[in-house]
Length: 105
Image (tube, rainbow, N blue to C red):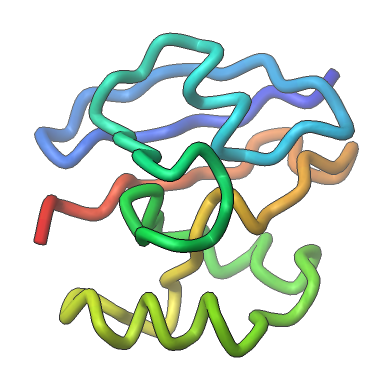
């Protein structure tokens, strides 16, 4: 069970024990981090699960799809580290990874 760190927009950090097979979004929500809204529940249709991924872990994830790219582009907050956490699978290699929840746009 990998453990990663998620930082809220106000700087508070949470250690999340994640189960492989879930998405990063699901793991964060199950941990009770309310700052990650995830309004659509993981359907890749709202961008309210936008996170900034630690660049040293970004290559572990599958490439960004067109829908995800469009939602992030439309958010106005996109950076090279931006991803939708609903599109990121929890993998064993995530031990020690860091994610920062994007501010509400």
